[in-house]
Image 1 (spheres, rainbow, N blue to C red):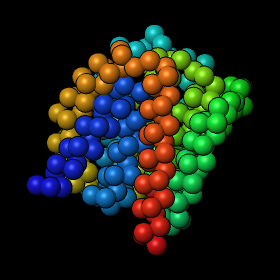
Image 2: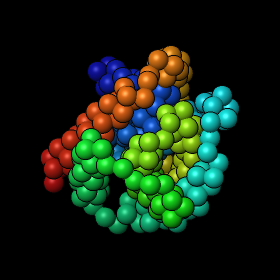
Image 3: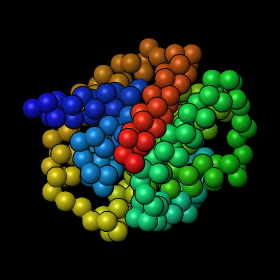
Image 4: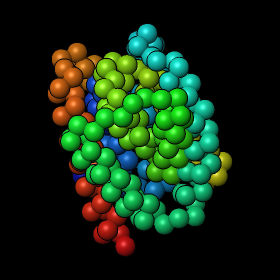
Length: 241
């Protein structure tokens, strides 16, 4: 019963964050799902539920999508996806999580210190590639997008819509690639099915929060989320060695 409540809590909070910010589910859910499931199971559950969330939200926010950036992210991610699978099947996952945690903490510090980056076509492709790599390796495409959009002062509505639109593509490709290369199992699909009602509740709450979330609070929220995720991944990866 305790495990089930933890699972429900993870999915609910992740769904609220995803709906209100456009990036929170994978960053919040994946590290904590690894407490309850094997890496393959945690990653695929995260991908399935994130894909469902994106499908449910995309029509309502479609007018805020930056289609030019979306196209570049998509092209870049196609290159990153196979490298992510290679990492997942050949490199110690704890070592990779440690590297990701350090990167998250470093980039969060840069953002807090008002680090800025200018959006360019080349950087759009690079960010898409990194997101594709992180999707198939640890199920977390969000950090590169979040850090890039925040560093370029992207308006929160555009950030949320463009990110969710990109997730529709990258999560679908990531899920298919994961299933083909590593397989799947009954636990993954049953857990995802049980989580759908919780996701719907989270979507409703998240929409309410988005309407009252101003840009300054949004930034603070971003810093807290990235810091907590980075610290958790760091501690969890060290304890697994």
